[in-house]
Image (cartoon, rainbow, N blue to C red):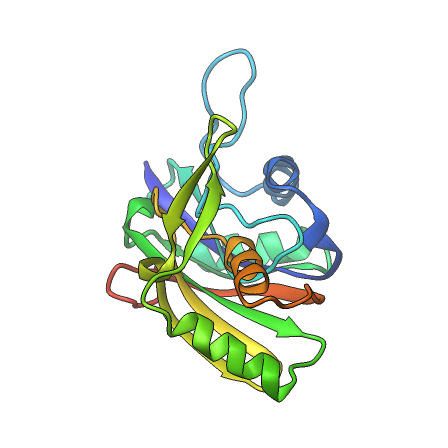
Length: 214
């Protein structure tokens, strides 16, 4: 039995589909494609699915990763990809299928593009000052429903601002996983900026060496 890694894009209307519903959606797509995946044992048999770093509701993703298992050691991966593409929907684009190289726990960072409706020179100055701060203290909700103060500055690996596009490389795939929504909330609050509309696209997942996760 080996892991087969599926790479896909989640765009358009599909960004409003929750992670739980994506599990159901992918199960149906895999069943419809009739690809040779391994099913769990027991009364409620289902395909084994392992998503890399679930994508937040409302975010688009251009480098999403899903692992499945197959008992076919000679599985035709090109045929696997073609079968998925034939039964997919317009806003889910399967673009690669390969054998898994790294384990999911080796994901270290995620890259996001944040698009604003517009960025004034004053706003741009505040953004740069915010991300150049040595410490950015904000509140994060805990799993138990409480809150705690954390310093997110060490969790922001890179940032760049080009016009109305902000690119962030944030820690991902572990307990220090940093969501862009927390970063933006801190930005608006600490810089005294009235919140404005922005869209988020996750463009890449990296390993701990900042190389594309494969």
